[in-house]
Amino acid sequence: MRVLRLSLIVLLAFLISVSIAWASEDRVNKSISGLVWSTGKEGGLFGKSHSEEPVDLNDNDELDGGFSSLDGMLQWAIGHSDPAKLKDAAKSMQRLSDDELKQRQIEIQDLMEKLRMPSDAELMKVAIDDLNNISISLEDRLRALEELLVLVEPIDNANDLNKLGGVAAVISQLDNLDLDVRKLAAWVIGKASQNNPVVQNQVLELRTLAKLMKMVRSDVVEEATKALYAVSALIRNNFDGQKIFYAEAGDLMLKDILSNSTFDIRLRRKCVSLVGDLAECQLENTDKSELPFFSDHSFLKAIVDLALSDDLELQEKSLATIKILLQLRTTDASTFKDSCALDNALEKMRMQLRQLMEEEDQREYAMDVEILRREVELIFYKKLENGL
Image (tube, rainbow, N blue to C red; front, side, top):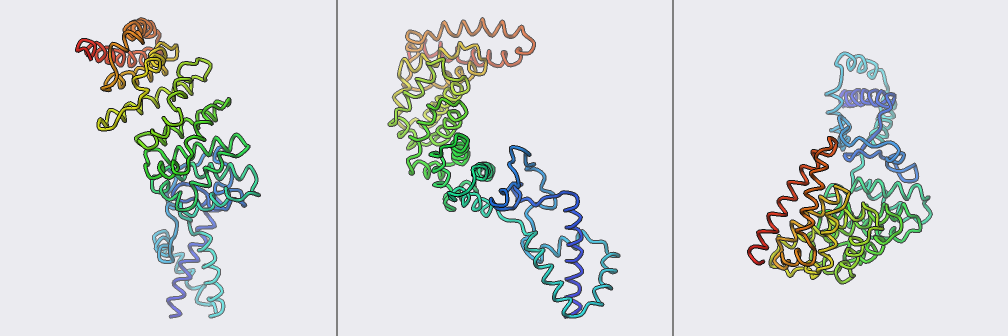
């Protein structure tokens, strides 16, 4: 028995020396998501905000997953040991008394606890607890939201968010007086809800959509765009969410932003993309009744007008959305011609794009947009010719 205990201690002692070497090289403990393990009170899971020093999510190497058991630690130690050094260490260990061996075991056990990597769920729980702590500093509150923004990206982690009380905790931050807190909270909601019906429904049940839609009207562009990102993530491919969106006058909100040039170009791009997403969802679910604003003439005209924008990215997004709208059964080609003057718009775009293709730095992008323009033109005139 004493020989076995000596062997264990020799291996773990070797592990201690390697761990110390790691520390001397400024290595830090990371979870599988790349987050540093410490509490919010100790400066956050990152140690400091990842906005100051980005976390390399690909740098997992030996630290990936951590040591979940004594056996795992021993196996790692064996695989990274030098037999000659182990033999020398064993000789020195043989001179220890039973009491000294017992003390060394306690020390190694303490070290093993410190080296244990927390799971992503544990990291999320720490961040959520920080959000629920009313006395925490603004810096730590922001750090907790930044950590959750990274942690909820994997769908399994996003699905755990509500189980840990995180959905309600993050939503509550939308009422915070600090702009950056509200912005980050909306971003986390959007990230967790992206293509995730489980989280979408959890957020919708807490009547969060109306609050986010109000934030879209913010005078601060960053807050408005993050809120619109969250709105888009919540209603994409979610018909219950789309019904709430329409009931909350979401169509009027979109029309206002699309038709009003005073809104920031970034917000208008996101609005056009959202309309395209909604139309595509409708196209893929023909058994569902179409949202009324898809046949609203003034709404369609606002999108066609944006296709003539000087901003090439906005022009491209508008064309992509028009292409999908033309394929819906409720949209009429004659409406696009008579009320939206799509035929004239397509010709003007052709002339604009021809000029841009003469500029070396714009040529490739302009050629891609021109291909899209031709596709729209083909669908439009074919539908017009068939009287649809």
